Image 1 (cartoon, helix red, strand yellow):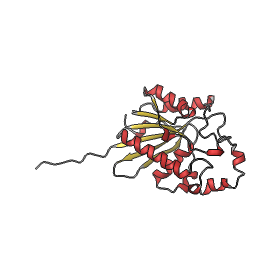
Image 2 (cartoon, rainbow, N blue to C red; image 1 turned 90 degrees about the vertical axis):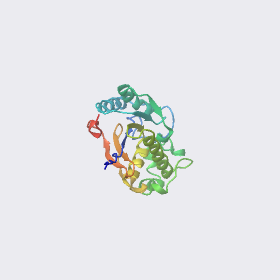
Image 3 (cartoon, one colour; image 1 turned 60 degrees about the vertical axis):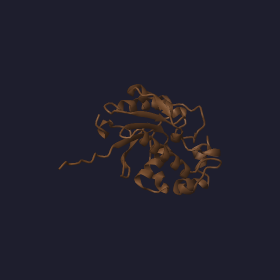
Length: 216
């Protein structure tokens, strides 16, 4: 009698990297406005992240089309030998008429409480809702994990889309996503396997090497 063995499900690892600091980080809601580049500290954060990839076999690198994300991805691309592929699904939330506003001014608006406490109900004026942003980001990651099944994919994106993706992977409601903190230059990791719920392996990491996430 011949024994049959079932192959172990393939793990696809997606690393979500927030772009490095810019001159307006923490001060302005830049959104999708073009022309915002990394600061010198942001470029150093990009270099440090690339160094953390040592020993981890990367299969593909994707980035939001915005300059600050693409610039952060460049160091990782140079280190791994992969080109940076732009993916619109990884881009920043469309903040509509709030784009470019100072955060201190937005915090005075009555709508700011909704943004922080009930984001699932909020849509930026002439922009995107948080629910639309989450659906876009989750759909993008689903496509990438299917396209690179069993591989390691590094995605350079923005704080809110990353938070929304992590919240979804955890099975938490969108109204909880603001409880997640994502620092500039940090990496979060989600493991995908067929037939299983996603596993969140790492959130907002800025220090340790990453080769322990997957055998090289």
